[in-house]
Length: 442
Image 1 (cartoon, rainbow, N blue to C red):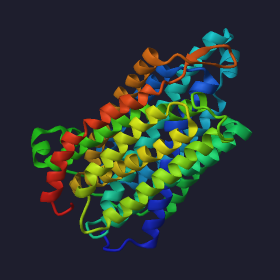
Image 2 (image 1 turned 30 degrees about the vertical axis):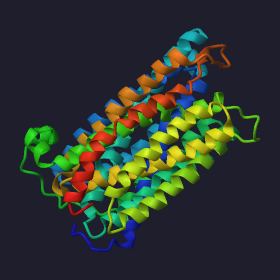
Image 3 (image 1 turned 135 degrees about the horizontal axis):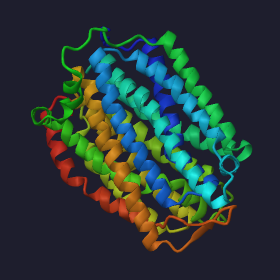
């Protein structure tokens, strides 16, 4: 597929459709699945940590394997379309998972049924992650690199920068409200159907970005390409960007998986007549919207990304510290969270753009797995476990579910922990800044 200096309407449509739906599905998994496990199933912070860790390992191995396979056979479309179709089906499967159903099947006590259901949710989350990572993380992200060129990549990144924000807003507003009114099963079925339909549409709308000629390299060579010392040395800018993304993502994973739970059970809701989705929605719209709009200007500006790296990190770290001191006051929490979200959004977009800029175009599929190690696996293995340890040591409040099971509510100390982890990014940012100034993509 020949690259165009200006993206066609059909390409833009597919970028928006598959990019948006992928972000919606991931937003539900990263936020509402944790709330679903905590409120509906009876899981605790350790269970959430285990689920996040398990799915992160699956995501990385899947992206590494399937991204390399898509490079090896030189095709993307089949992975994107088939992946989205089955991805939707796995999301719908969650509608039938409950403690009541598990108790009927096993004929066990509520405690045993809860433990079994928690295990089933984690297993199904891993299966769903396999399909999502195949279609979105591996194939779609590589397809984006395939179809874009230096002349239109900044505009494409600007568009992609908006999608996570819009998706989070849609998920928080729609999924949050609908789950309260109709329950989680209806929401899982609805979301799954939409994702599946998206994959079916892609069969007719997506043009494969590869020419279908198989690679002459062995599959093992494709699989191990990103780990070779010679590759790391010759792509120093890329790996510095990945280290920065890894630190940022670890800090984010210390608080993000518990954000909805924290607001739902710790924040004082009597100050204002607002629901949890309303609060998160306002924070994301303001903070994420500002970050996305500023990023669009930065990515399209001749001054480049370098001058904005440090300010983005400062907003992120300072915002997290302020969230901690806001304690359970909803007004202070929201104001501080907006500052943190501006920094979060800017850093995520800047580092994501940097990784794509420094990725060799002919090796995009093979390097998606390496990207996932830094942006997903290590952060999700480390971050939630740090949060769980912080909660066990500092939390004194409990949530008692309908079955009488008491679990600790995440403590505000997770935000200080995230700020400390986030502050370590300034050292690799110094080197990334230098790489940007030396490159033509600064």
